[in-house]
Image (cartoon, rainbow, N blue to C red; front, side):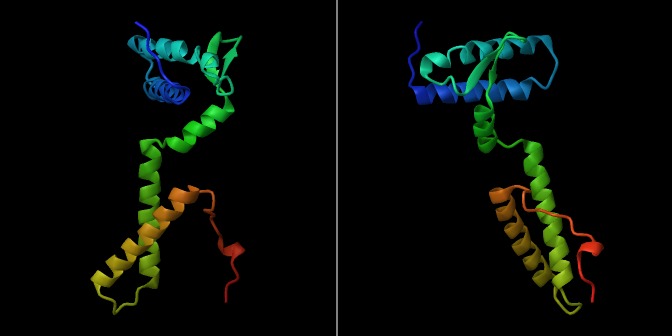
Length: 146
């Protein structure tokens, strides 16, 4: 059997193989070595598709490994479920905090919930764009107190 694909399709195949191997590779079980073997087989053809800048061969481990360029591309395209949950929880908690700080005692619960949803949405937009790169913890020593 001969499978033909374009350079773009092969790069996508490499990404799928590597992501799958990385995901299942966190479990140390013998039957999962098939994923590693297939990933190695696919990565071994990178040069044939003009994608040698994405994969290199490590003489010490005798394995094909993704280059930093490849890892950066993959990190932009993937998010772990834990990261998504973390950022959503963080956005929710910060949104609640901000809504409660802004609320007056006379504010109705509906208004506070509406503000919480608004802030949650704003934090999610921030995290989607910048992850936590612009998130800083400010201590009381960093802020001028009146």
